[in-house]
Length: 409
Image 1 (tube, rainbow, N blue to C red):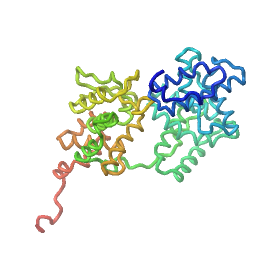
Image 2: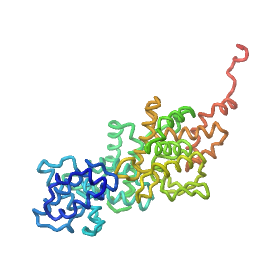
Image 3: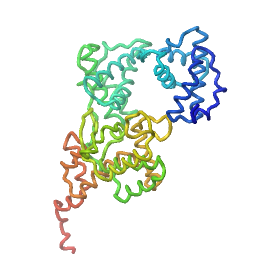
Image 4: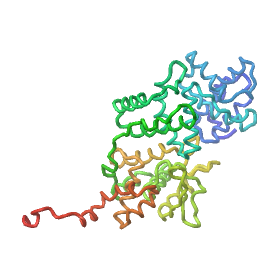
């Protein structure tokens, strides 16, 4: 029995049914992954519920898959039980049973309705044909759903009769309800209509009927932090703790390399080339690029790897500090910046603010806009142009003297 297992009282797990022989092995695996004792107990008790459910149906372990998990939870919810659980709650159990060879390969859960079926094909088109990142696909699918929901009549989805007027009315309605999210909504709708035309679901291309959202590109100033403020954020992290060392490494990567939160979360151990002093980055549109690895960034990563990173089979560079030791998500990376900023008294700061700060620091050090664009991996030079607004010295050199200023002096 492992040390983690010793802290879990499995006598509280009622495990009758076909899964009963696997309880101890499941508990040991969860404990080995770093789950807290309370979490191990929770998952084992859930395993007991599933086992009894299978037993009542005289079903074998091998029938358990994603569809059966959905069926199990649907019945529990209908009876008012386990209301906080979703299908994903059973993923650790399914993964364990697959690892011991008693459950088959994952199966795709069939879409619940016509709208879900269309959105599933739309997501596949965006990912495979357009090569968009997973996060972008999720956003576009989410923003496109209300349009399709508005075309349903019960369980039926009528796409053939969609008109340009309906498209325009939807955009106008979204402009009134959610004006701030209108630009991405328009982009998602236009993308959906192009897909539906290519898919043969609508007769004519209605993408041209989507009104253009009025935006003032580069109208504002990039919000940045000073060098002292970035240092203050780093100083809130305790290098004597594993969490502190990890957060120092994350903040150093964000502030020195100007990486996006999603890019930091996607970093693998193999992405750091120590011999060449480079780091590989998967950016927007799954583009692979390489950047030099500054000494301070490398030192922060080494300290984390040597003294703080959990010893697991995960290949992700940055892992969650508490079990299960999974790769950090983009939100978790951004939350590291938010927590450090709050402790430093800087208010609300997210990871992207450090990206802007990295660009500003390069500008102050004499870097040119094209050089900054290369480091930030901008596809278009116009995107980098916003940083010209914070180049005060450069702006002074091209500004005209105020009329009468010399006479007043």
